[in-house]
Image (tube, rainbow, N blue to C red; front, side, top):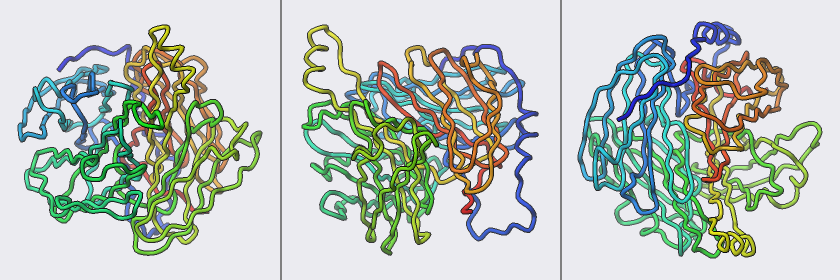
Length: 493
């Protein structure tokens, strides 16, 4: 573990708490839905303990060059915590740490469990006020916040086992002392699939299981996974590696978190533009229920781009469908958002998939100059939970040139007033302080390149915030970190 000091810390938590008090529901507003809990959320200083679950490979896995878990403090004083690293061989290593205000701790899991291809890191912080994420580099890059939630159900809408050149693992981490029992179901090109070892799988306490999907369900263009936990709870992610050897030229790496619930409204802000992406954009929708679902995939465009006709989809029970966003409807449209909404209030899960394809001419030119084509694979699970407070840790971004922060207002009638603040690091140039966001619209903030930066997004009504990164190392994207206590389900009106 390595700790180093971030740039000057600006403590704005008091202002954050004050702004989050806006938009609180009236006492008479009674909801039948369960409380909204984001899959990644952090507590403000002193409010409660936080547990972060970081799941992934190590540099012992072929195709992985480096994996770093970063713990960034936004507390006004010292923060104590502990780290537990477990691997797929049953080993567990525990270490304590202390972070001063504004410090950043780096953890390389492979050094704790040498020789293991996969490792899970649990970061426990009794006082909260830290943001934990991980960056994985290889033939591509993936950079996202870690999970803070375990669940008895996980959904993974997209992976591919098309051969040659694709490898997929379903990673299941049980951070608790007691064992968990898991059932796995898959939906491939020929419908539902189960393997002999996918039912009643035991995930021992404080362990990690890496389930090789490629070996069990090979040669499927799209594989969706459903994880049902009979006993206990686990955290789930899917690792996809593509080396460009397949017929589509797909190349890159992607470590997407699972979705802990299906809902009738799902969102992905900050998408596109489609034209000039060098590949394709699609939305994969999965129906985990027992009833047929009618839904629409809606592009939320700016007023200047005009209306785009939605994509209608009908899904039978246990079925999934791929919606191609490159069919011409979005030609000439700039950055947009995606909403998946069911017409009968039935829950679904969805992911946005960006797959880059390198043209033969470009590949030949790069080979002649000794340069490699940029890997481009980024999968963004759609978000069901909205919040009035979000934190974004951009980490080390020395090569990033196309980062954007996107914030979407999914409400049908209420305006969201946003305020963006810098908690640590240097503010990106041109970052506005206050923005008014109309219902059903989004705003995009270019972030440029630079060192570690932690931003706070505060809103008077619940919104969705995410970051998209594009650099010479590849592309990646993920949802921001919600602030505990500000989460909600999106309003239907």
